[in-house]
Length: 191
Image 1 (cartoon, one colour):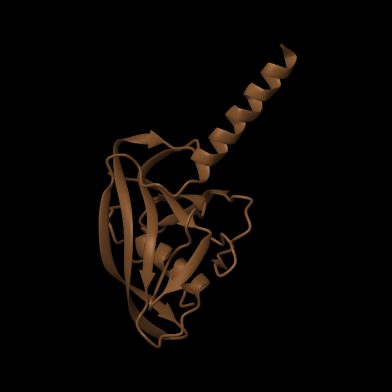
Image 2 (spheres, rainbow, N blue to C red):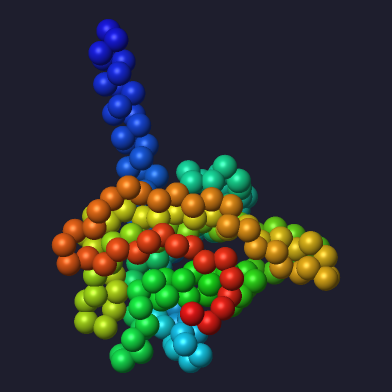
């Protein structure tokens, strides 16, 4: 009886971990491709990003963060311009900042006294491969997860960003894949 209970707990823990870090788009999500501007070494580049997202209304509690979330976003492909030479880590950081409410604000989330808080969860594959000029996840890659919170404090502090949670899978990327270090940015600089 004790052995069955231990096996059941192990199976439950493993299935929860798999669900937490998978890179599947949420049920009912929308696929999109957007051109975002990423600054790298003082130059702005137009980068095509393919992703899926789900808007939760009302807000939902998601696996990585116990706080309520407005959006869940999964990055699926990043295509920088030919010859830009932007490293993968900087492409991913720039892509995240394109959605950031305090930076480029791709979803045009209004942050003010009426709408004082926005929360997004990002799922970014940890293992990537370059196919032609684009970066896409390696087959079976788990995702790094992060939850961001943006707050309107006052007219003197109109946008306060907090990276509330980061969840990183414990994996080794397959041969031929480039590993992203799950380094979620907290500022809007030029990388």
